[in-house]
Image (tube, rainbow, N blue to C red):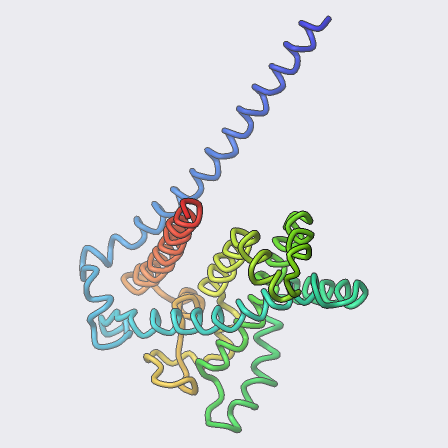
Length: 290
């Protein structure tokens, strides 16, 4: 009887292992196929004009044979960097407030609001930004559609990601750590800074990576509030265009080399995400070794 139960458990474990392996293979295959698809679609224009011209041409004007992606790459990076710089401390500190300063009723209400914020479609954010935020910025300096509007919208959109990840990470800090800090006489903020943050740093870092990925890939909201002018923004009030917005605006009518050039934009975005993942892996390994 015991032997039969052991064999049954062993068979179940083997089936589970093979199912998990199959899921891993499918997930990996999807990523490989996406990269291959992008590579094949970009081949026509890369063979004709080369990769260098996508960063050295005078401007972006595929009808005239000009394919410079640099202004849109800078727009993407600036909007992403600004929003992450603003959203990260706001999200983490809001999670700290919920766990260590707010009453249970206020903390629960705040979490529900953050979850609701995470579920709002991006087009709604963009519409709100277009009719409310852009006119407010336009009062400071015309035209209002600008890098600043894009940063503000992205900050609001990615805030729930880092806030909810930070909230989950802080909830997993062992209570023994908190009791030990209290026994040592540490203040509440001293406990958070010296005990909670080091214990939860892995989850907090994951939240930053996820919010950065979303900021890079956001399309609709950023398209509606940034002005869609192909230029490198010199100030926060300059209109600009991101790589994702460029694809969304022009893919519907693009043909030939123009269409292939838009796939190069997608390949550049994929390279940014890969670089983000590699950087996260290197940093996380450094944290483990420390």
